[in-house]
Amino acid sequence: MIGCALTPPQVNVGYHPGAPAAKVADSSMPHVSVEVVDNRKTREVGETIATFGIKTADTVTRADVPATLKSAFESELKNRGFIESVDGNTLIVRLGYFRNVFVQRSFVFEASASMDLEVSIVSAGGAIPYRKYVTGSAHRTFAVASGGNEQLMLEAALRDAVSKVFNDPQFLVALEKS
Image 1 (tube, one colour):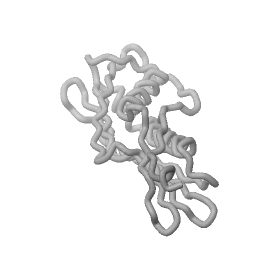
Image 2 (tube, rainbow, N blue to C red):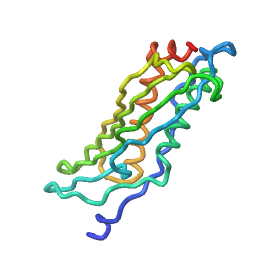
Image 3 (tube, one colour):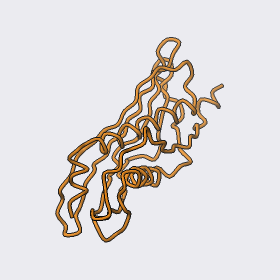
Image 4 (cartoon, helix red, strand yellow):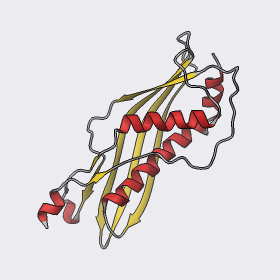
C-alpha cells in the first residue's frame, strides 16, 4: 500500500477546445506566431495530501506542457481565422504555475487545479498593445484521487485560462493591430 502511495501517478494532459469560435479575423489582419516560456519552478503537475496531511507522490505528465499550451493557443487563433506566421504579431505566453492538488476530506478528495499565465502581444514594430496576467482554475470533489481525475482537473484549468484570454475583447483588438 505504501509503495502505491509513493509511486508517482502519470497523466497525459491535452487541450480540448470548448464550443466552436466565431471567425473574427480576415486576411488583411496581421499574422501571429505563438511563443511559450515555461517559468514553472517544478515540472510536477499534481500532488495528493492524504489523511493527517501526509503528502504522497507528486504527479508527472507524459505531455510536454509548454507544447500543449502552444498548441492550445495556435488552435484557438486558427479557429478565429488568424494566420500563423512569424512576420506579424508575436503572442508570448509565460507559464508560471500549473498544478492540481487533491486533499482528502473524510471520505472524499477535494481537487483544486490552477494555471497562471502572463499573456503579451508584441507587434512587429516592438510595441506591446496587450499584457495581462490570467489564471485558470477548476474545483471539484471526487471519491477517488486518481490520475484520470487529476488529468480532468488539469485540462479544465487549462481550458479555463485559455478561454479567459480569448473572451477578453482587448486581447482580440490588440491582435488585430499591426
